[in-house]
Image 1 (cartoon, one colour):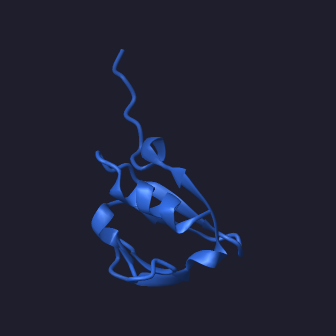
Image 2 (cartoon, one colour; image 1 turned 30 degrees about the vertical axis):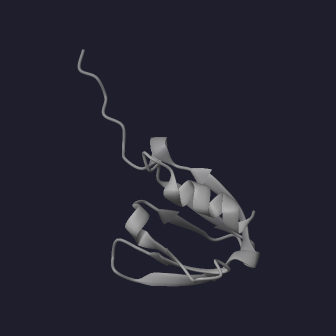
Length: 80
């Protein structure tokens, strides 16, 4: 995973929520573009959570990015 790949996901228009997978098995969701901030070099990022907590990550420890459009909200069942 490269800094440029993360920037592309973050700056996509329209924005699509995505999941950041870490080398230690954790993952963090970026559900809004304002929930992610880069340092000037781009190597370190901060991801804010909806509960106002946040994580500071070294991008060398990020293994992959995954769009989560279909998982962001529960799907409604159609009425019969």
